Length: 369
Image: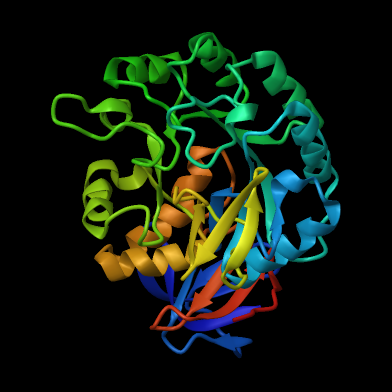
């Protein structure tokens, strides 16, 4: 496949170039020969990497439903995500184990690639549980983590933990040898969060949401993440975080900023009543909440987040980096960049950021509205 007349994102800079690939990228530059696809001056960017997504199309990774995984993979690819980390909720081991088995055994027939598992819980705190089910919260437990990781086939790439909970620091020291440990759904103050990062945590789950505020005398997890050079996530649906805070966070964290969707089963679906981790949620005007009004994740795609932050003022190259290269680096994936020899996971966008084509391992994927 040869794409010509494109602005190709290399690192964080666009260059006018052609790009050739089969399953992997074989050449970038001025390439002779007829184009298979003329980008007409549009953009070729890396496929997006969503490291925090619970589901879409009425399906949720926590369901443990093998039949639900392909529709989600197809949805992600159709909306510009070529790799995703399947994210589960705070649930019992009896519910999470079959969910791990379903992810372990999934063999996709096209669509985006499942790059692993994100255990968002159950090792969280009650006060900042957000939309996580209180009855399934669990003290940090390395044994439970290892059992779930084994059930997933060793695919856990990220786990969120409240570092102030009893046993959290030994947990972090152990588990950070296995996967990326993230601080989140936590009441930790600055000193406690710094201890968590010193123990081996290197990431913060949906910054600002599920944690104490960033105050001038009490900077909390946010200040500790900055001082520890941790990577951080932002939900950029225009509801969870004010655009001014997104701009400021980009200035603070730079290349460590990760855009996420935090999408729920309502992504790609109409407004209505849904379920999340055993709790009813309501989606109205694309805003997902528990019945008491608590925000409960989003209904956007990661490409929607990229479009949103560019509308809020971030340069396109920076926004794409934060949704592709940065999250891949945060959880140790070989993805999210355009370079010779890399898997041909690519998006073609027009000048208005409309998605024109998606390739996963060089194979073109079906698009949908």
